[in-house]
Image (tube, rainbow, N blue to C red; front, side, top):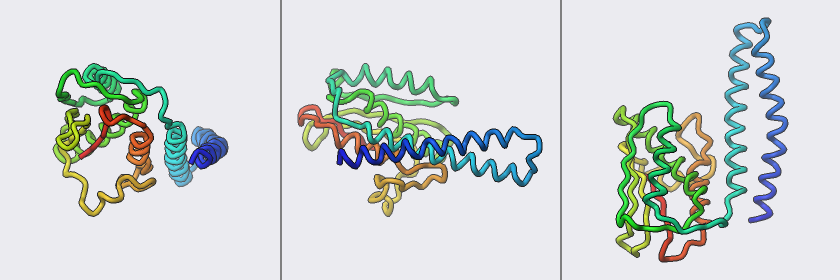
Length: 210
């Protein structure tokens, strides 16, 4: 697995260089006054797909960097409040995020940077589907002890229609997406991050989205 990770990262780096050249050439052509209207549309297609390939490359590189290191135990309530403030301020449109943590002094053992990456992806998904269903960008982040084993659980809940039952077995597969502009790697990387963390039974974090 380590060798495969290094291989995919190397391939991603190699693809990035020619992709950058293609993107740069497209930008230069786009600035030319001699470009015809029909050719302008072709340049837009080149730009759109260059950006999509670049997002795939970034996701692959993020995945290759996902290691169970720099783990730390920290109070989840304070961390979550900071995350919500930072995430909300980064959005171009108003959003609403409710946080519910019980017990208030709960601590988790995780890599905080990777937890932020997971939550960012899940929150963006939740807000998008809430808006599609209700017109409002609203989600709830709930952290509580599991009724099954007492370990911490994190739930990101939106107001969308939910995941169709026939797709539940596929949503974590790499490159599977229902969005035309998506890469299909977001949820896959989220799962990989959670799977590689050797978290003890007393503080294991589980992340769910629905």
